[in-house]
Length: 302
Picture 1 (spheres, helix red, strand yellow):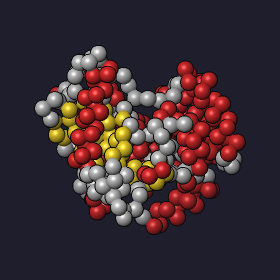
Picture 2 (cartoon, one colour):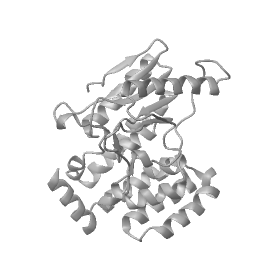
Picture 3 (cartoon, one colour):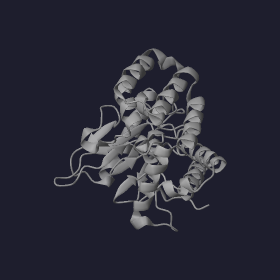
Picture 4 (cartoon, helix red, strand yellow):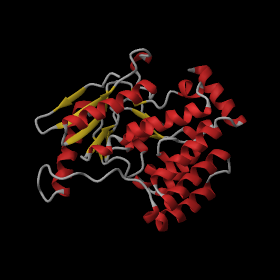
């Protein structure tokens, strides 16, 4: 399995560049497919062997950060195959926090679905406002717009970063935000309009260095870093009322119910159980008449 391009600076901070599948270049658009999932896993394993003091996740695409999962690839799998596919993705993404160092994702263009879930496995997301005259790019979890649900922890990580009721309504309706309207908390830092990707990467490195200093008593680099932010049983008193509030604002549907069930599972049983619930719901939901109609229409335009 080929690894992705990496760059290491003098402080040992590694930038990992996400790239498109060479066999499916898609005009340079980065899409989460089996090839990229495998390449992320292999690349993170190589970084872990060599060691690093921090990781910056960046995209080689000039058009997107990551456009989302390869729905055609997913739709071609049987149920057992899709379960295995989702498990491989979860394991690959988990390799990022497992590095035990501060991590930051540079969201310079669209980050949707699995692309945002991948980014949220990092400690911080670094954003930027679009240049004058540039169309704002979308950021969010649009899966419910196709009558399915997230499958790589989105229902758990988004309400841990932003107002949980806002996160749950957005997830259960599948409504992404424009980058200029992203709720407070999702981006650790937002750079000025027209900031370049190299400037954003430097800001990500600055965040990593500051995180080391804040976490380790002023030392630039030190002990292992805490894992990614997500919800869990300790958050039940805060999340459960927000879930009730959000549920009252969202029309009942199988896919919305699945999202709320995953949140309830997360606050009762934690990350592993919640992501397993996401997988079960996603595999089930894609067979509903509503999802089949949405997916068929989406894939016919792809």
